Length: 93
Image (tube, rainbow, N blue to C red; front, side, top):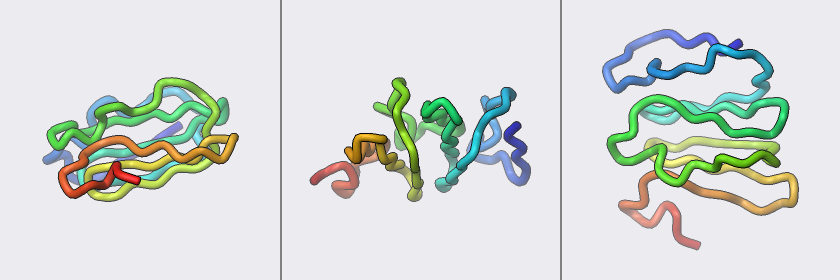
């Protein structure tokens, strides 16, 4: 089960997953990303930059990381997926 606390000024706590099975969590400035044991990526919190835009909806991920307004996940086939804000080319390359 995911437990989150602290300020909610940027809706960081909005839509926090209530089911279990998460083994990795990363936090951006106002959004959070968790990796479920079935390989799904779950993202919640603020979307004003938009941090949640183009987030993956499939399974097959094994690692993840967050920066201020974008996130990165590593697929089991070694491909890297980036989503979120692209204001300074975070998603290029």
